[in-house]
Image 1 (tube, one colour):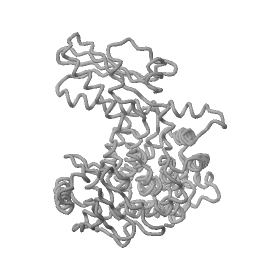
Image 2 (spheres, rainbow, N blue to C red):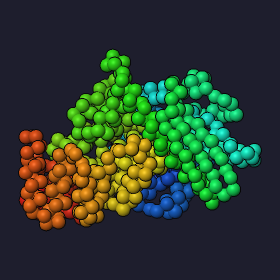
Image 3 (tube, rainbow, N blue to C red):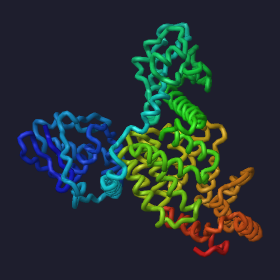
Image 4 (cartoon, helix red, strand yellow):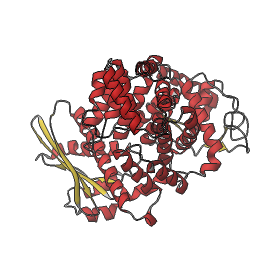
Length: 537
Protein backbone atom coordinates (compact mmCIF):
# COMPACT_ATOMS: atom_id res chain seq x y z
CA UNK A 1 0.00 0.00 0.00
CA UNK A 2 1.31 3.44 -0.97
CA UNK A 3 0.38 6.60 0.94
CA UNK A 4 0.17 9.85 -1.01
CA UNK A 5 0.14 13.26 0.65
CA UNK A 6 -0.84 16.29 -1.43
CA UNK A 7 -1.38 18.80 1.39
CA UNK A 8 1.56 20.85 2.52
CA UNK A 9 4.68 19.21 1.08
CA UNK A 10 4.14 16.54 -1.59
CA UNK A 11 5.20 13.09 -0.41
CA UNK A 12 4.75 9.46 -1.37
CA UNK A 13 5.61 6.64 1.03
CA UNK A 14 5.66 2.86 0.73
CA UNK A 15 4.00 0.28 3.00
CA UNK A 16 6.83 0.56 5.52
CA UNK A 17 6.57 4.36 5.73
CA UNK A 18 9.77 5.02 3.75
CA UNK A 19 9.52 8.02 1.43
CA UNK A 20 9.76 7.34 -2.28
CA UNK A 21 11.54 10.21 -4.07
CA UNK A 22 9.68 11.24 -7.24
CA UNK A 23 12.28 12.80 -9.52
CA UNK A 24 10.17 14.58 -12.15
CA UNK A 25 7.93 17.54 -11.34
CA UNK A 26 5.54 16.44 -14.08
CA UNK A 27 5.27 13.04 -12.41
CA UNK A 28 4.21 14.72 -9.16
CA UNK A 29 1.66 16.78 -11.06
CA UNK A 30 0.37 13.63 -12.77
CA UNK A 31 -0.06 11.82 -9.44
CA UNK A 32 -1.92 14.80 -8.00
CA UNK A 33 -4.31 14.89 -10.98
CA UNK A 34 -4.94 11.14 -10.86
CA UNK A 35 -5.64 11.35 -7.12
CA UNK A 36 -8.42 13.94 -7.37
CA UNK A 37 -10.54 11.91 -7.21
CA UNK A 38 -8.66 8.69 -6.55
CA UNK A 39 -9.58 5.91 -8.94
CA UNK A 40 -11.02 8.04 -11.75
CA UNK A 41 -9.74 6.92 -15.14
CA UNK A 42 -8.18 9.84 -17.02
CA UNK A 43 -7.76 9.68 -20.79
CA UNK A 44 -4.30 10.39 -22.12
CA UNK A 45 -5.81 13.31 -24.07
CA UNK A 46 -7.04 14.86 -20.79
CA UNK A 47 -3.61 14.46 -19.19
CA UNK A 48 -1.79 15.90 -22.19
CA UNK A 49 -4.17 18.89 -22.26
CA UNK A 50 -3.38 19.54 -18.60
CA UNK A 51 0.39 18.98 -18.46
CA UNK A 52 1.53 19.72 -22.02
CA UNK A 53 -1.06 22.17 -23.28
CA UNK A 54 1.48 23.90 -25.57
CA UNK A 55 2.35 20.72 -27.50
CA UNK A 56 0.61 18.80 -30.25
CA UNK A 57 -0.86 15.36 -29.52
CA UNK A 58 2.14 13.37 -30.79
CA UNK A 59 4.61 15.37 -28.70
CA UNK A 60 2.30 15.22 -25.69
CA UNK A 61 1.90 11.44 -25.94
CA UNK A 62 5.67 10.98 -26.17
CA UNK A 63 6.22 13.21 -23.14
CA UNK A 64 3.57 11.35 -21.15
CA UNK A 65 5.21 8.01 -21.99
CA UNK A 66 8.54 9.34 -20.71
CA UNK A 67 6.99 10.55 -17.46
CA UNK A 68 5.21 7.22 -16.92
CA UNK A 69 8.43 5.33 -17.57
CA UNK A 70 10.26 7.48 -15.03
CA UNK A 71 7.45 7.11 -12.51
CA UNK A 72 7.51 3.32 -12.83
CA UNK A 73 11.25 3.37 -12.10
CA UNK A 74 10.63 5.54 -9.02
CA UNK A 75 7.92 3.15 -7.76
CA UNK A 76 10.06 0.09 -8.41
CA UNK A 77 8.77 -3.48 -8.55
CA UNK A 78 5.40 -2.49 -7.06
CA UNK A 79 4.57 0.04 -9.78
CA UNK A 80 1.80 -2.14 -11.24
CA UNK A 81 0.13 -2.24 -7.82
CA UNK A 82 -0.41 1.53 -7.97
CA UNK A 83 -0.74 2.36 -11.66
CA UNK A 84 -3.31 1.18 -14.18
CA UNK A 85 -2.33 2.15 -17.71
CA UNK A 86 -3.70 1.39 -21.15
CA UNK A 87 -2.95 2.83 -24.57
CA UNK A 88 -5.76 5.35 -24.03
CA UNK A 89 -5.99 6.00 -20.27
CA UNK A 90 -4.23 6.13 -16.91
CA UNK A 91 -5.51 5.77 -13.32
CA UNK A 92 -4.33 5.17 -9.77
CA UNK A 93 -5.63 1.99 -8.15
CA UNK A 94 -7.58 2.98 -5.02
CA UNK A 95 -7.06 -0.46 -3.48
CA UNK A 96 -3.28 0.16 -3.42
CA UNK A 97 -3.01 3.92 -2.86
CA UNK A 98 -4.24 5.76 0.23
CA UNK A 99 -4.59 9.54 0.43
CA UNK A 100 -3.43 11.49 3.47
CA UNK A 101 -6.22 13.99 4.30
CA UNK A 102 -3.69 16.55 5.58
CA UNK A 103 -3.88 18.81 8.62
CA UNK A 104 -6.48 21.61 8.88
CA UNK A 105 -5.31 24.74 7.06
CA UNK A 106 -2.68 22.99 4.94
CA UNK A 107 -2.69 24.13 1.32
CA UNK A 108 -3.01 21.68 -1.54
CA UNK A 109 0.48 21.22 -3.10
CA UNK A 110 1.85 24.16 -1.10
CA UNK A 111 4.59 25.97 -2.97
CA UNK A 112 4.21 23.69 -6.01
CA UNK A 113 4.02 25.19 -9.49
CA UNK A 114 4.42 23.95 -13.03
CA UNK A 115 5.14 25.94 -16.16
CA UNK A 116 1.89 25.06 -17.83
CA UNK A 117 -1.08 27.46 -17.62
CA UNK A 118 -3.66 24.66 -17.87
CA UNK A 119 -2.20 22.87 -14.83
CA UNK A 120 -1.87 26.12 -12.89
CA UNK A 121 -5.56 26.85 -13.56
CA UNK A 122 -6.53 23.33 -12.45
CA UNK A 123 -4.47 23.67 -9.29
CA UNK A 124 -6.01 27.06 -8.53
CA UNK A 125 -9.50 25.60 -8.99
CA UNK A 126 -8.67 22.67 -6.73
CA UNK A 127 -7.29 24.98 -4.05
CA UNK A 128 -10.40 27.17 -4.26
CA UNK A 129 -12.56 24.06 -4.01
CA UNK A 130 -10.77 23.07 -0.82
CA UNK A 131 -11.27 26.56 0.60
CA UNK A 132 -14.95 26.43 -0.27
CA UNK A 133 -15.55 22.86 0.85
CA UNK A 134 -16.83 24.08 4.21
CA UNK A 135 -19.40 26.22 2.39
CA UNK A 136 -20.46 23.65 -0.16
CA UNK A 137 -20.49 20.68 2.21
CA UNK A 138 -19.43 17.14 1.34
CA UNK A 139 -20.09 15.92 -2.19
CA UNK A 140 -23.52 14.44 -2.69
CA UNK A 141 -24.77 12.82 -5.88
CA UNK A 142 -27.07 15.61 -6.98
CA UNK A 143 -27.83 13.81 -10.21
CA UNK A 144 -29.11 10.71 -8.41
CA UNK A 145 -32.57 12.09 -9.17
CA UNK A 146 -31.74 11.52 -12.82
CA UNK A 147 -31.66 7.78 -12.19
CA UNK A 148 -35.46 7.90 -12.04
CA UNK A 149 -35.23 8.99 -15.69
CA UNK A 150 -32.77 6.28 -16.78
CA UNK A 151 -32.48 4.80 -20.27
CA UNK A 152 -32.11 1.28 -21.61
CA UNK A 153 -31.12 0.55 -25.21
CA UNK A 154 -32.86 -2.68 -26.22
CA UNK A 155 -31.22 -4.95 -28.83
CA UNK A 156 -32.02 -3.73 -32.33
CA UNK A 157 -33.97 -6.26 -34.36
CA UNK A 158 -32.22 -7.81 -37.34
CA UNK A 159 -34.75 -7.64 -40.21
CA UNK A 160 -32.27 -8.61 -42.92
CA UNK A 161 -33.42 -12.21 -43.17
CA UNK A 162 -29.84 -13.29 -42.67
CA UNK A 163 -28.84 -14.47 -39.16
CA UNK A 164 -25.22 -13.69 -39.97
CA UNK A 165 -26.11 -10.00 -40.08
CA UNK A 166 -26.97 -10.09 -36.37
CA UNK A 167 -23.46 -8.80 -35.58
CA UNK A 168 -24.28 -5.56 -37.39
CA UNK A 169 -27.51 -4.85 -35.49
CA UNK A 170 -25.78 -5.79 -32.21
CA UNK A 171 -22.95 -3.43 -33.11
CA UNK A 172 -25.38 -0.56 -33.63
CA UNK A 173 -27.01 -1.30 -30.27
CA UNK A 174 -23.68 -1.38 -28.44
CA UNK A 175 -22.45 1.80 -30.14
CA UNK A 176 -25.57 3.76 -29.21
CA UNK A 177 -25.28 2.50 -25.64
CA UNK A 178 -21.61 3.56 -25.53
CA UNK A 179 -22.34 7.02 -26.87
CA UNK A 180 -25.22 7.58 -24.44
CA UNK A 181 -22.92 6.55 -21.60
CA UNK A 182 -20.87 9.66 -22.38
CA UNK A 183 -23.73 11.81 -21.07
CA UNK A 184 -23.01 12.22 -17.37
CA UNK A 185 -26.60 13.36 -16.75
CA UNK A 186 -28.03 10.18 -18.29
CA UNK A 187 -28.35 7.03 -16.17
CA UNK A 188 -27.75 4.04 -18.45
CA UNK A 189 -28.64 0.40 -17.87
CA UNK A 190 -25.80 -1.95 -18.80
CA UNK A 191 -26.19 -3.59 -22.19
CA UNK A 192 -25.89 -7.03 -20.58
CA UNK A 193 -29.22 -6.39 -18.83
CA UNK A 194 -30.86 -4.93 -21.94
CA UNK A 195 -29.79 -7.87 -24.12
CA UNK A 196 -31.86 -10.20 -21.93
CA UNK A 197 -34.82 -8.88 -23.94
CA UNK A 198 -33.47 -9.95 -27.31
CA UNK A 199 -35.97 -11.61 -29.66
CA UNK A 200 -38.95 -10.96 -27.42
CA UNK A 201 -42.15 -9.08 -27.96
CA UNK A 202 -41.74 -6.48 -25.25
CA UNK A 203 -44.23 -4.42 -23.33
CA UNK A 204 -42.46 -1.07 -22.72
CA UNK A 205 -44.16 -0.54 -19.36
CA UNK A 206 -43.20 -4.03 -18.17
CA UNK A 207 -39.59 -3.67 -19.39
CA UNK A 208 -39.31 -0.24 -17.79
CA UNK A 209 -40.43 -1.64 -14.44
CA UNK A 210 -38.08 -4.63 -14.64
CA UNK A 211 -35.05 -2.55 -15.59
CA UNK A 212 -35.97 0.41 -13.40
CA UNK A 213 -35.84 2.97 -16.24
CA UNK A 214 -38.12 5.65 -17.62
CA UNK A 215 -37.06 5.55 -21.28
CA UNK A 216 -36.40 2.81 -23.84
CA UNK A 217 -34.52 3.07 -27.13
CA UNK A 218 -35.73 0.49 -29.64
CA UNK A 219 -34.86 -0.05 -33.26
CA UNK A 220 -34.37 -2.32 -36.22
CA UNK A 221 -31.76 -2.86 -38.91
CA UNK A 222 -32.60 -4.02 -42.44
CA UNK A 223 -29.65 -4.61 -44.73
CA UNK A 224 -30.09 -5.39 -48.42
CA UNK A 225 -27.11 -5.48 -50.73
CA UNK A 226 -25.12 -2.29 -50.41
CA UNK A 227 -27.81 -0.37 -48.52
CA UNK A 228 -28.93 -0.38 -44.93
CA UNK A 229 -32.04 1.09 -43.28
CA UNK A 230 -31.95 1.74 -39.54
CA UNK A 231 -35.11 2.76 -37.70
CA UNK A 232 -34.98 4.13 -34.15
CA UNK A 233 -37.57 5.24 -31.62
CA UNK A 234 -37.55 6.62 -28.10
CA UNK A 235 -40.37 5.30 -25.89
CA UNK A 236 -41.64 6.56 -22.55
CA UNK A 237 -41.73 3.39 -20.44
CA UNK A 238 -44.18 5.03 -18.05
CA UNK A 239 -46.90 5.54 -20.66
CA UNK A 240 -45.67 3.44 -23.65
CA UNK A 241 -45.95 6.63 -25.69
CA UNK A 242 -43.53 7.40 -28.52
CA UNK A 243 -41.43 10.53 -27.91
CA UNK A 244 -39.30 10.54 -31.05
CA UNK A 245 -38.46 8.37 -34.04
CA UNK A 246 -36.31 8.58 -37.13
CA UNK A 247 -35.03 6.48 -40.00
CA UNK A 248 -31.60 6.40 -41.60
CA UNK A 249 -31.03 5.10 -45.13
CA UNK A 250 -27.36 4.79 -46.04
CA UNK A 251 -24.95 3.15 -48.45
CA UNK A 252 -22.81 0.55 -46.71
CA UNK A 253 -19.49 1.85 -47.96
CA UNK A 254 -17.60 1.89 -44.68
CA UNK A 255 -19.63 -0.14 -42.21
CA UNK A 256 -17.74 1.02 -39.12
CA UNK A 257 -17.91 4.70 -40.05
CA UNK A 258 -21.63 4.20 -40.66
CA UNK A 259 -22.10 2.71 -37.19
CA UNK A 260 -20.22 5.64 -35.63
CA UNK A 261 -22.23 8.24 -37.54
CA UNK A 262 -25.62 6.79 -36.66
CA UNK A 263 -24.69 6.05 -33.03
CA UNK A 264 -23.49 9.64 -32.50
CA UNK A 265 -26.57 11.15 -34.14
CA UNK A 266 -29.04 8.93 -32.30
CA UNK A 267 -27.30 9.50 -28.95
CA UNK A 268 -27.53 13.28 -29.41
CA UNK A 269 -31.21 13.16 -30.36
CA UNK A 270 -32.20 10.71 -27.63
CA UNK A 271 -30.37 12.63 -24.90
CA UNK A 272 -31.94 15.88 -26.10
CA UNK A 273 -35.47 14.49 -26.08
CA UNK A 274 -34.96 12.88 -22.67
CA UNK A 275 -33.80 16.27 -21.37
CA UNK A 276 -36.89 17.92 -22.87
CA UNK A 277 -39.19 15.33 -21.33
CA UNK A 278 -37.53 15.77 -17.92
CA UNK A 279 -37.94 19.54 -18.12
CA UNK A 280 -41.63 19.21 -18.94
CA UNK A 281 -42.16 16.83 -16.03
CA UNK A 282 -40.30 19.18 -13.67
CA UNK A 283 -42.52 22.07 -14.72
CA UNK A 284 -45.62 20.07 -13.84
CA UNK A 285 -44.53 19.25 -10.31
CA UNK A 286 -46.18 21.13 -7.43
CA UNK A 287 -43.91 23.46 -5.40
CA UNK A 288 -43.82 21.10 -2.38
CA UNK A 289 -42.42 18.27 -4.52
CA UNK A 290 -39.49 20.06 -6.15
CA UNK A 291 -35.88 18.96 -5.54
CA UNK A 292 -32.57 20.34 -6.80
CA UNK A 293 -32.74 18.29 -10.00
CA UNK A 294 -36.17 19.69 -10.88
CA UNK A 295 -35.06 23.24 -10.13
CA UNK A 296 -32.17 22.94 -12.58
CA UNK A 297 -34.48 21.48 -15.23
CA UNK A 298 -36.86 24.43 -14.76
CA UNK A 299 -33.97 26.83 -15.17
CA UNK A 300 -33.07 25.04 -18.44
CA UNK A 301 -36.59 25.56 -19.74
CA UNK A 302 -36.51 29.27 -18.94
CA UNK A 303 -33.06 29.64 -20.50
CA UNK A 304 -34.29 28.19 -23.79
CA UNK A 305 -37.03 30.80 -24.03
CA UNK A 306 -35.21 33.82 -22.53
CA UNK A 307 -31.68 33.55 -21.14
CA UNK A 308 -32.07 36.85 -19.25
CA UNK A 309 -35.07 35.75 -17.13
CA UNK A 310 -34.40 36.87 -13.52
CA UNK A 311 -35.90 33.65 -12.15
CA UNK A 312 -33.04 31.54 -13.57
CA UNK A 313 -30.39 32.47 -10.97
CA UNK A 314 -32.97 32.20 -8.17
CA UNK A 315 -33.79 28.63 -9.22
CA UNK A 316 -30.10 27.71 -9.44
CA UNK A 317 -29.31 29.31 -6.07
CA UNK A 318 -32.11 27.30 -4.50
CA UNK A 319 -30.81 24.11 -6.16
CA UNK A 320 -27.33 24.70 -4.69
CA UNK A 321 -28.89 25.41 -1.32
CA UNK A 322 -30.88 22.14 -1.41
CA UNK A 323 -27.96 20.09 -2.72
CA UNK A 324 -24.49 21.69 -2.29
CA UNK A 325 -22.96 18.65 -4.00
CA UNK A 326 -24.83 19.07 -7.30
CA UNK A 327 -22.07 19.87 -9.82
CA UNK A 328 -24.44 20.82 -12.63
CA UNK A 329 -26.21 23.42 -10.48
CA UNK A 330 -22.89 25.04 -9.52
CA UNK A 331 -21.64 25.07 -13.13
CA UNK A 332 -24.83 26.62 -14.51
CA UNK A 333 -24.84 29.23 -11.74
CA UNK A 334 -21.18 30.08 -12.52
CA UNK A 335 -22.03 30.54 -16.22
CA UNK A 336 -25.14 32.57 -15.47
CA UNK A 337 -23.28 34.87 -13.10
CA UNK A 338 -20.65 35.46 -15.80
CA UNK A 339 -23.43 36.17 -18.31
CA UNK A 340 -24.84 38.84 -15.97
CA UNK A 341 -21.84 41.02 -16.81
CA UNK A 342 -23.72 41.57 -20.07
CA UNK A 343 -27.39 41.17 -19.15
CA UNK A 344 -27.12 43.31 -16.00
CA UNK A 345 -24.24 45.57 -17.08
CA UNK A 346 -21.98 44.50 -14.22
CA UNK A 347 -18.19 45.00 -14.56
CA UNK A 348 -16.35 41.73 -15.02
CA UNK A 349 -14.43 42.35 -11.80
CA UNK A 350 -17.71 42.37 -9.85
CA UNK A 351 -18.89 38.95 -11.06
CA UNK A 352 -15.53 37.15 -11.25
CA UNK A 353 -15.25 36.11 -7.58
CA UNK A 354 -18.64 34.40 -7.48
CA UNK A 355 -18.04 32.80 -10.86
CA UNK A 356 -14.78 31.31 -9.58
CA UNK A 357 -16.39 30.10 -6.35
CA UNK A 358 -19.15 28.13 -8.07
CA UNK A 359 -16.80 27.01 -10.86
CA UNK A 360 -14.34 25.59 -8.33
CA UNK A 361 -17.13 23.71 -6.56
CA UNK A 362 -18.42 22.30 -9.85
CA UNK A 363 -14.92 21.22 -10.94
CA UNK A 364 -14.42 19.40 -7.65
CA UNK A 365 -17.78 17.66 -7.80
CA UNK A 366 -17.99 16.82 -11.51
CA UNK A 367 -17.88 13.11 -12.30
CA UNK A 368 -17.08 12.96 -16.00
CA UNK A 369 -19.99 15.23 -16.97
CA UNK A 370 -19.11 16.99 -20.23
CA UNK A 371 -21.96 19.49 -19.85
CA UNK A 372 -20.54 20.64 -16.50
CA UNK A 373 -17.12 21.26 -18.06
CA UNK A 374 -18.52 23.15 -21.04
CA UNK A 375 -20.53 25.43 -18.72
CA UNK A 376 -17.30 26.12 -16.80
CA UNK A 377 -15.49 26.82 -20.07
CA UNK A 378 -18.13 29.39 -20.99
CA UNK A 379 -18.06 30.98 -17.53
CA UNK A 380 -14.29 31.37 -17.48
CA UNK A 381 -14.21 32.67 -21.08
CA UNK A 382 -16.81 35.34 -20.36
CA UNK A 383 -14.79 36.73 -17.44
CA UNK A 384 -11.60 36.68 -19.51
CA UNK A 385 -9.82 33.73 -17.84
CA UNK A 386 -9.00 32.02 -21.09
CA UNK A 387 -6.51 29.27 -20.10
CA UNK A 388 -9.10 27.88 -17.66
CA UNK A 389 -11.75 28.16 -20.36
CA UNK A 390 -9.64 26.20 -22.85
CA UNK A 391 -8.83 23.53 -20.26
CA UNK A 392 -12.49 22.89 -19.45
CA UNK A 393 -13.49 23.03 -23.12
CA UNK A 394 -10.91 20.35 -23.93
CA UNK A 395 -12.27 18.28 -21.04
CA UNK A 396 -15.83 18.62 -22.34
CA UNK A 397 -14.95 17.70 -25.91
CA UNK A 398 -12.87 14.71 -24.79
CA UNK A 399 -15.67 13.42 -22.58
CA UNK A 400 -18.56 13.83 -25.00
CA UNK A 401 -18.27 15.55 -28.39
CA UNK A 402 -21.84 14.42 -29.21
CA UNK A 403 -23.54 16.39 -26.45
CA UNK A 404 -25.78 19.06 -27.93
CA UNK A 405 -25.02 21.35 -24.96
CA UNK A 406 -21.28 20.83 -25.47
CA UNK A 407 -21.63 21.76 -29.13
CA UNK A 408 -23.63 24.95 -28.51
CA UNK A 409 -21.71 26.32 -25.53
CA UNK A 410 -18.45 24.94 -26.91
CA UNK A 411 -18.94 27.02 -30.07
CA UNK A 412 -19.54 30.10 -27.92
CA UNK A 413 -16.33 29.48 -25.97
CA UNK A 414 -14.30 28.74 -29.10
CA UNK A 415 -15.38 32.12 -30.47
CA UNK A 416 -14.12 33.95 -27.38
CA UNK A 417 -10.87 31.97 -27.53
CA UNK A 418 -10.35 33.05 -31.14
CA UNK A 419 -11.07 29.71 -32.85
CA UNK A 420 -13.77 31.24 -35.03
CA UNK A 421 -13.86 28.80 -37.95
CA UNK A 422 -13.88 25.78 -35.64
CA UNK A 423 -16.72 27.44 -33.74
CA UNK A 424 -18.69 27.91 -36.95
CA UNK A 425 -18.28 24.23 -37.90
CA UNK A 426 -19.41 23.16 -34.43
CA UNK A 427 -22.50 25.36 -34.33
CA UNK A 428 -23.49 24.19 -37.82
CA UNK A 429 -23.18 20.57 -36.63
CA UNK A 430 -25.31 21.43 -33.60
CA UNK A 431 -27.99 22.92 -35.86
CA UNK A 432 -28.11 19.67 -37.83
CA UNK A 433 -28.55 17.68 -34.62
CA UNK A 434 -30.84 20.12 -32.84
CA UNK A 435 -33.21 17.95 -30.78
CA UNK A 436 -35.32 20.96 -29.83
CA UNK A 437 -36.23 22.05 -33.38
CA UNK A 438 -36.20 25.79 -32.98
CA UNK A 439 -33.49 26.49 -30.43
CA UNK A 440 -31.97 29.85 -31.32
CA UNK A 441 -28.35 29.88 -32.44
CA UNK A 442 -28.54 33.53 -33.33
CA UNK A 443 -26.23 34.85 -30.63
CA UNK A 444 -23.49 32.32 -31.45
CA UNK A 445 -23.78 33.00 -35.19
CA UNK A 446 -23.76 36.74 -34.67
CA UNK A 447 -20.59 36.62 -32.55
CA UNK A 448 -18.77 34.22 -34.89
CA UNK A 449 -19.54 36.26 -38.00
CA UNK A 450 -18.75 39.52 -36.23
CA UNK A 451 -15.33 38.23 -35.14
CA UNK A 452 -14.67 37.04 -38.71
CA UNK A 453 -15.47 40.55 -39.98
CA UNK A 454 -18.61 39.31 -41.75
CA UNK A 455 -20.82 42.11 -40.49
CA UNK A 456 -23.62 41.62 -43.03
CA UNK A 457 -23.87 37.93 -42.12
CA UNK A 458 -23.84 38.88 -38.42
CA UNK A 459 -26.73 41.32 -38.93
CA UNK A 460 -28.75 38.66 -40.76
CA UNK A 461 -29.28 36.99 -37.38
CA UNK A 462 -31.59 39.85 -36.39
CA UNK A 463 -33.99 39.19 -39.28
CA UNK A 464 -37.17 37.79 -37.75
CA UNK A 465 -35.71 37.90 -34.22
CA UNK A 466 -38.72 39.17 -32.25
CA UNK A 467 -37.06 40.25 -29.01
CA UNK A 468 -33.26 40.11 -28.86
CA UNK A 469 -31.67 40.55 -25.42
CA UNK A 470 -30.53 44.08 -24.69
CA UNK A 471 -26.82 43.27 -24.90
CA UNK A 472 -27.40 41.83 -28.38
CA UNK A 473 -29.01 45.12 -29.43
CA UNK A 474 -25.77 46.80 -28.40
CA UNK A 475 -23.78 44.22 -30.42
CA UNK A 476 -25.91 45.11 -33.43
CA UNK A 477 -24.83 48.74 -33.03
CA UNK A 478 -21.16 47.73 -33.29
CA UNK A 479 -21.76 45.76 -36.51
CA UNK A 480 -23.73 48.60 -38.10
CA UNK A 481 -20.98 51.05 -37.17
CA UNK A 482 -18.33 48.89 -38.87
CA UNK A 483 -20.42 49.03 -42.05
CA UNK A 484 -20.67 52.83 -41.83
CA UNK A 485 -24.48 52.88 -41.62
CA UNK A 486 -24.68 56.04 -39.55
CA UNK A 487 -28.46 56.50 -39.74
CA UNK A 488 -29.15 52.90 -38.71
CA UNK A 489 -26.64 53.26 -35.86
CA UNK A 490 -28.50 56.33 -34.61
CA UNK A 491 -31.85 54.51 -34.84
CA UNK A 492 -30.49 51.45 -33.03
CA UNK A 493 -29.04 53.61 -30.26
CA UNK A 494 -32.36 55.40 -29.77
CA UNK A 495 -34.17 52.05 -29.54
CA UNK A 496 -31.56 50.83 -27.07
CA UNK A 497 -31.93 53.93 -24.93
CA UNK A 498 -35.71 53.55 -24.85
CA UNK A 499 -35.51 49.88 -23.79
CA UNK A 500 -32.57 49.76 -21.41
CA UNK A 501 -33.18 49.71 -17.65
CA UNK A 502 -31.81 52.72 -15.80
CA UNK A 503 -29.08 50.62 -14.16
CA UNK A 504 -27.92 49.12 -17.48
CA UNK A 505 -24.79 51.08 -18.45
CA UNK A 506 -23.93 50.92 -22.16
CA UNK A 507 -20.26 51.77 -21.57
CA UNK A 508 -19.84 48.97 -19.01
CA UNK A 509 -21.20 46.32 -21.37
CA UNK A 510 -19.17 47.67 -24.29
CA UNK A 511 -16.03 47.46 -22.13
CA UNK A 512 -16.90 43.88 -21.12
CA UNK A 513 -17.22 42.92 -24.79
CA UNK A 514 -13.75 44.30 -25.45
CA UNK A 515 -12.25 42.41 -22.50
CA UNK A 516 -13.84 38.97 -22.99
CA UNK A 517 -11.76 38.01 -26.05
CA UNK A 518 -8.53 36.02 -25.81
CA UNK A 519 -7.05 37.61 -28.95
CA UNK A 520 -6.30 41.36 -28.70
CA UNK A 521 -7.39 41.88 -32.31
CA UNK A 522 -10.85 40.45 -31.52
CA UNK A 523 -11.23 42.74 -28.52
CA UNK A 524 -10.13 45.68 -30.64
CA UNK A 525 -12.75 44.77 -33.28
CA UNK A 526 -15.46 45.27 -30.64
CA UNK A 527 -13.86 48.45 -29.30
CA UNK A 528 -13.49 49.95 -32.77
CA UNK A 529 -17.15 49.25 -33.55
CA UNK A 530 -18.29 50.92 -30.34
CA UNK A 531 -16.01 53.92 -30.86
CA UNK A 532 -17.35 54.39 -34.39
CA UNK A 533 -20.83 54.42 -32.89
CA UNK A 534 -19.80 57.13 -30.43
CA UNK A 535 -19.71 54.87 -27.34
CA UNK A 536 -16.84 55.52 -24.93
CA UNK A 537 -14.89 52.36 -24.01
